[in-house]
Image (cartoon, rainbow, N blue to C red; front, side, top):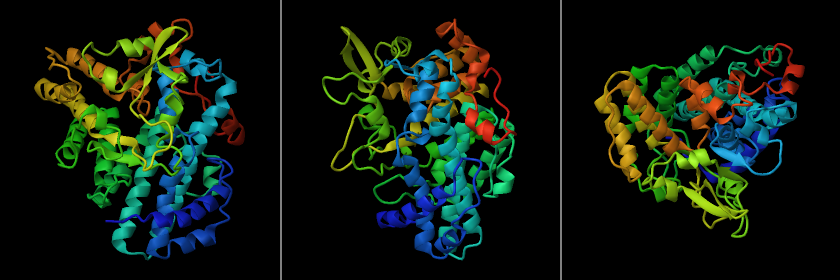
Length: 459
């Protein structure tokens, strides 16, 4: 196992700062000015470990990026889960009408942070390849870097479609790289996660699940297989995670705590002022304030009457004389001593839903229903039944919406991967929805920098 010592944060911060100074743009990366320094970093176990840990730290250092709550917010607005009250350019995501004024948000929140983290993982992978650090640690750090690179690409392709597949720090190669077909990016994800699952440790460090393990790699791989419609692989990988004996389905009140037994991977806050950025963005700041982001009526009404998630994971405030509901999976707005909530990236319930969907497509309706009802039971709902594949798939879509709402863009991604996005969104936004709205536009500034990038249709 590769152990984590918080004292390494100083080293990892300096290393990441050096990397960041060499990344003026996410893809058009100037030749690194820190090559000598970064080579030195990977000459001993302690500093090599700190360098990889720097990726985690940077992913949670600021709130305005896709991996610190923003995917939940923007994809949630796009999928009609969330509504943004203020007359702000973010309302364009609610209406599925993204204009040029929002390209800066797309660049600063999604595109640039993702490619910055990808650049860092690539640099770590290159330096690790020539490093003479302890072999077991070297394998562990490589596995973590591979996973984190996949994590970034997974969100990029689901938001933008085809994206440049950057696997090196070679400036000349990257600066004019065109978009890579989504299918090829997914195949790279499978390759990377398969290797990561083989070389990562299976045990967690004491008291935290904030480092990637074998189970995180398998859990994300199960999701990737589901998106690729490789039902056998998705079922097998999800089963490995479910049967690991390390994860349970605790009470709804415990799911999003730092100590949750359901967590497969969480991100540790690096700012002691906030437990999670998502809690800070969504929860009202005081008893007299209303939340900035609220659940749409359609989302709130989609819960079944006796669904406990409707009360435990949803908060309510009065706004202009009417009750409004907001996501309350994270319950702490500000600081805590000690922090009680970490940002959940992967959890067990999703694995049951992945396996249920895979089994249903394989015509194992009994197995699919068993997994589905495990999640329903935790929510206080009675077991349900379905007589055919189509009916069970509809139930699974509803259950994924109820269980995974306001988490990492699941609803938006689900609508697209199942081919349901046009049918659903044409009902919600009939005057503005176009099929091309399923993908966000490539930030216009990136196209100016790299003429090889072709804009998505409709923009």
